Image (cartoon, rainbow, N blue to C red; front, side, top):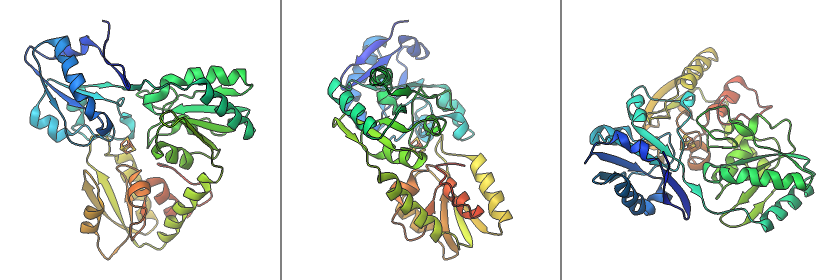
Amino acid sequence: METVKCMSDPYVVEINPYDLNKVPYGGTILLQLPDGLKQYSGRIVECLRKIKGDLRVVVDASPTYGACDLHLDTIEALNPDLVIHIGHNMYPRKLGFVANADKAVSKTVFIPAYSSLHIGQDMLDRLARTLLGLNARKTSILATIQHVKELPKIAEYLKTRGIEPVIPEPLFPEMERGQVLGCEYSALTTVDNIVDTHILVSGGDFHYLGALLASTKPVVKVDPYTSKITADPEARDKIIRKRYYKIMKAFDADTFGIIIGSKTGQYRPWIINALRNTLKSEGRKHIEFIIGSLTKDSLLNIDTPEIGAYIVTSCPRLPIDDFAEFHKPVLTPGEALMVLKRKLDRYLFPWF
Ligand code: SF4
């Protein structure tokens, strides 16, 4: 069945009418969009009504940061016939899943929103010059979901400039070729030892920061929104130094607080159990906490004098982006393992 283009600018959003077959006449759709796309909900609602006629569409007003958070409570309360989650593909199941998320996932359609911005010739030229300045002969090319469609074009151009491109496959089938998430950089790490540089097509610094932490090679950021190419050879060292400071501060903690996530894709028993076993075998104590959204206030609320450091097993970006200034070390699972095993030679991000 042919898809219907509900939006073409600044993002391309296409709906497959087949997906709406699950919705009976007059049925209910819950529409979820990341905060940056919520302003376009009117266009999407109108488009859905054009495709399917009389429909009740309810826009989820709560913040949506990723497909790891499908708002299970909202889905259970509204009991829609279909959830349309725009802007992300499905969160890799193997990374984490709450037990009762299956019902919500089975009625959810994930629809990417591809950016309509294109990397023009001027940016391609500047990118090639930057890479040649870094003596790159072989490079990976990566992107956030919005920009993955640009990767083949960049690859073709780099070949004409004598640079060998690789668009690597992530480890998880839910993700697209060359795609990274804020907590999932397997596309980068699987080729890190065979490339000289990584290119990341992404707006803002969130994914760039993660790529710096996951990589041992220079990362060149291509920002389609500002047309800027960033290649700071010091950037990785700066952020890694800050993280090692936190790691060292956690070395003497006797008791660790383990933060468990209750959002649909943020419950990770494989990490929680490994940490509990390692803490026990290394003679450290722990207290477990479970929460949906971890904020500074909620962490202050649960803080006890015994706890010397926290390990966040829900979203591994929280320790880096939100809790870097907290008065006690707040670590990712990878960093916690470095502390517990006293192995500092290789920085582990974000898992182990
Ligand atoms: S980085 Fe955090 S918010 Fe983003 S997908 Fe991963 S767990 Fe979810």
